Amino acid sequence: MKLGLIWGYWSAQPPKDWVELTQEAEKLGVDTVWTSESWGSDAFSPLAHLAAVTDKIRLGTSVVQIAARTPTACAMHAVTLDHLSSGRLILGIGVSGPQVVEGWYGQPFKRPLARTREYVEILRTAFEREDYLSYEGEFFQHPYRGPDSTDLGKPLKIMTHPLRTEIPIFIGAEGPKNVAQTCEIADGWLPLYYSPYRQEVYSDVISNRKETFEIPLNMIVNVTDDIESGLLPIKMSIALYIGGMGAKGKNFHTELMSRMGFENEAKKIQNLFLEGKREEAIAAVPSDFCDEISLVGPADRIRDRLQAFEDSPITMLNIAARTSHELREVSEIILG
Image (cartoon, rainbow, N blue to C red; front, side, top):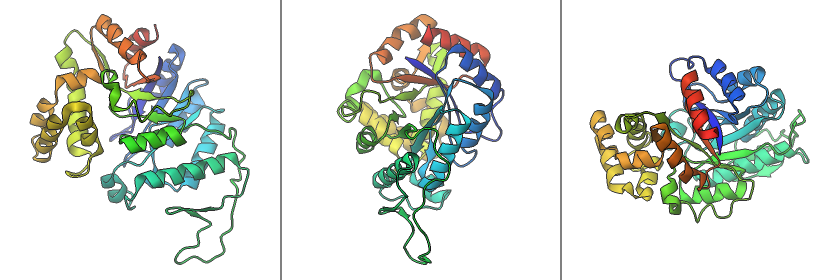
């Protein structure tokens, strides 16, 4: 099992000691450091900084949002960062949800699977740099020939020769169709919640993945003697995602929790959160669910439960360690 360090997206300010902890993670054998974006900090800029102060650790986005950039702009970012890091980039992309796509990026949230497929096809063409980019899709056209076109655009190749023509593309996906498509067109899948005790939720849709396919999982690892208290941060996160990251009739996280066997609980959490009863929503998150998707408890318990993830399709566990002690403690448990 590989180990990753996830920084996510920044809130009001950059996280404390994020550069120093990433350098320490590299020394400890952590495989990848990950950044994210929502409607604040972007995912590429922090990785460019980390590329300059590290040597071996892979640099992944988990995820950059498709609505934030055209596929060619994303390809430019990726090719540049792959050069700056001497070929260490993992390009993780995702569609986000309608609240962010339409609310922040001002783009329509329409047919996300088809949009993702076109996006990946254009990225691959740009990275390969074999032909001039000429693409006629439902969502993307190169050159543009639609309304208000000057008809002066012409097919182009990316000017900078990619260091790697096969920059790995991972996709954040939750729904069964999205996950199945990810296994078909991408090099890795970035799941949200995954329980090794309920592998049947995804077993059929990931059966067509190639042998080198990677599945890094963001999760909380909390070494503590008080299991219930250790699960509280997970409950707080789940309440936010199930209740607040989406709308009443369109929340992919709520739908996922329901497919994992907690439909009634998911609906209750969402209703309480939307009613403004956040503390009650947190309390309504079942401990069993949190325990299945995390590693919480004394070190020996975590080592025992780690085996379930070792026996699953998961290839990497990404942790949000924020102190040197926590990073070293978890690294010793996971990596030995």
